[in-house]
Image (cartoon, rainbow, N blue to C red):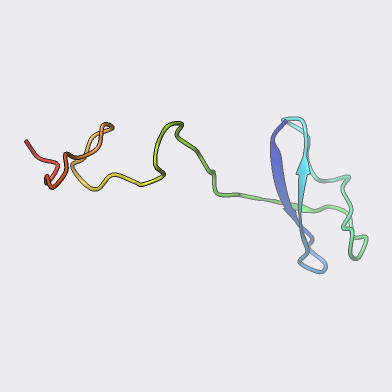
Length: 74
């Protein structure tokens, strides 16, 4: 199930909710003030590459990385 983030239009409190795809936040209520009709937010996506060091290759470096001391260009 996807994790969605919602914001309360009344107090601005943000919550995360596990929901089935296609469900909305119309029936959700704010845990702080009780207002219903929370607004779904767009969240940044995080991805993890297995076996990687977590470092992002620089410009010109392919998926295999740059050779030590290399510029990434052949």
